[in-house]
Image 1 (spheres, rainbow, N blue to C red):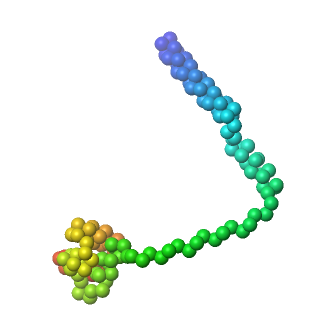
Image 2 (image 1 turned 135 degrees about the vertical axis):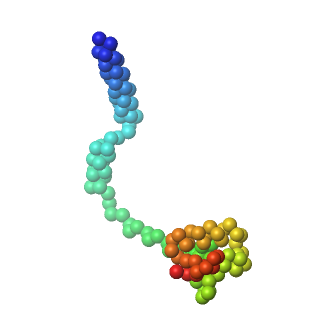
Image 3 (image 1 turned 90 degrees about the vertical axis):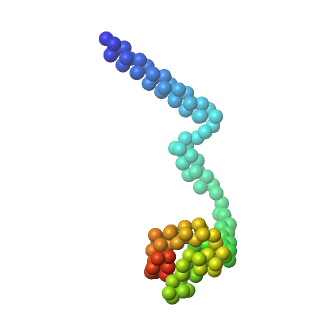
Length: 125
């Protein structure tokens, strides 16, 4: 008997939730929101009436990047050296602080763009 009462209460809660959803949907229709089906019909109707448009303008050519990114600067220094470069040399040539150089080296080594030849010496891959 207790199980039956619990089931009836659960069903009653579900019915109330459905009533709330139904009210929201009716309010949305009253406010003028269109459903997806109505929108497709409206689009189809407007396509027939539309006159020819002027051709679309082409997007303006984007400006070219003038500055290299920090990673590109470090890679450029590393690739120019035959024997390899250490971190102090990279810091001096790029002007970056120690942490930034370390992070760039870690990331580029992980990507396979550079490799280690010795302790603290890096060359382009």
